[in-house]
Length: 151
Ligand code: FES
Ligand code: FES
Image 1 (spheres, rainbow, N blue to C red):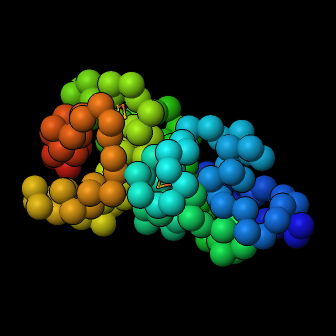
Image 2: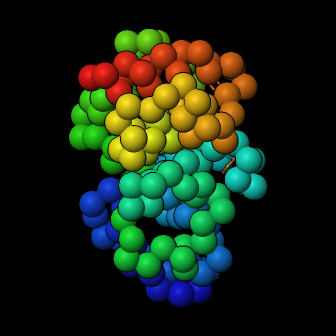
């Protein structure tokens, strides 16, 4: 066990955990931020995507010891009232089906648009490639990203 100070969604949290603990489990089990989902645990599905200094990362493969003073953002911290342009576009296009993958999808999409305000189809496909949706909502995801880019 070791002591860590983590910046999550603009707040500082002190934790005493094993240094190898993936951030996914710190978020879900210790901080009760359960919007970030567990899918595969091996960086292959994207369900656990969060932002590290604004960049999309897979929290299932990110040990707590590697985060340091960097800023973590989860789906709960993306916007105060759930009204981030990507979230609004998701509602407009009625994107989710079962919903399980969707926080990861939204975190990847919002990181993409932060880095590239007007992505091409190919850039959207490339950025979203690692986010799997068992329900096959890919067409709506792409349309919503385009709407958010134009908002
Ligand atoms: S749970 Fe992290 S990528 Fe699947
Ligand atoms: S909405 Fe069901 S897995 Fe994506």
